[in-house]
Length: 253
Ligand code: IPE
Ligand code: MG
Image 1: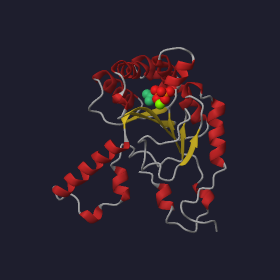
Image 2: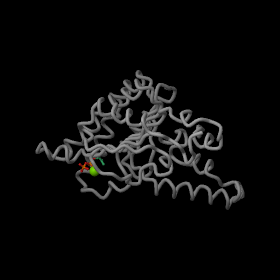
Image 3: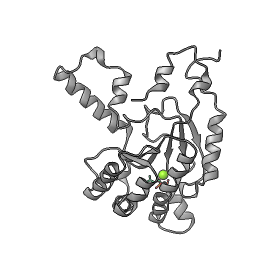
C-alpha cells in the first residue's frame, strides 16, 4: 500500500517540493445534463458523450505521467434520479466497458479498477466492470479507478462493519485501529491519496466523493461541462496544481 504522503508528513526534514509529484488525479464528471440541455437534447445524450470521453482522458493522463486517475461516474445518491435516466446510465456503463472495448484498455496498458458498492448494480454492469478488472489485471501503465455506485458514507460504513467484526472475533484490538488500517479497508486500498481533485460543471462541492482520500488534495473547479472538457482544460488544471504550495500543515524551512 502506498501511503507515502502520510508517511512523509512525519519526515519534517524533507522539503515541501518532495511532495509535489502528481500521482493521483480524481475528477468529478459533472455537467452532462446541462451540456445536453443547452443543445436542446435529452440528458442521456450528455451522459453518452460523457462516458465516451473517458478513454481518451485516461490516455492523456497517462501521457502526462499520472499514475492513478479516479473518475466519479455514478454516486450512491444518483439512484434518486428518474428511473429512465438511471436505467440509461446502467445500460451505457455496461456498454462502454463491454467485451468489444476491453481490448483497447488492455492494449494501452491501463489497469482498470472498480471502486464502489457491488451489491446493488444490475448484473450486466457488475459483469462488465469485473471482467475488465480481470482482463487488465497485469497492466501497469496507469490505473483507472471507475467510481460507480460510490459514496464515501457507504464506503465508511463498510470499513466500520469490517473492523467491528474483526474486533468481535478477536482478530483485532482497539489500539490496532489507526488511519493506515482504515485506509487499507477503503475501496481505494490500492490507490495513494488524491493529489489533485478536479470538478467540472461549475459546482464547488465534493458530493460525497473520496472524502478521506482527498483530505490534502488540491481542489480545482471549472465551469466547463464534462463533455466539453478538453486536453487544454486538463493541462490548465495541472498547471494550477504545479503552482500550489502543498504544505501539509507544515511551514517552509
Ligand atoms: C454528471 O452529469 C453525470 C452523473 C452524475 C451521472 P449530471 O447528470 O450531474 O449533469 P448536470 O449536473 O445535471 O448538468
Ligand atoms: Mg450534476
